[in-house]
Length: 182
Image (cartoon, rainbow, N blue to C red; front, side, top):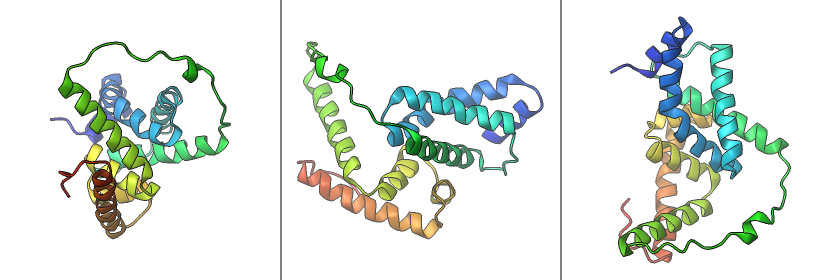
């Protein structure tokens, strides 16, 4: 299996297939991560492309095993910078949306409700806890990689994940989900 760093070097040596493979692999997850900051999927998609554009025009040196954390660190930096410059606006479009009339199977509804509850509970966490949990669980980063992305020590990430899980478990129990595992 080809590593991220090998695909990146492949691109640096002139083979566009490396770039395409990295965008395919990280495009959607990176958009989802950025959307956590911006809460606008269209802006998140644009910013994801900007992150890759920056990466592939500046061509920074990336140590072996560090591509994913470098990519997410760049995305975090750009998202925070973009968020601080963005103007918030109110849209009436959301008020006119019709509810979905499609009938769903009971299990699908239950799963969707659980996902919504999880997202609502995650939104109540401290931002550092939420980000540490997202990077380690949803992006499968090691604590060291998450520490690099967030500019923290590995010990701080360990503590944030532990405290975040404890707080999240309490929030989920409050919402009636009692089988949340640590």
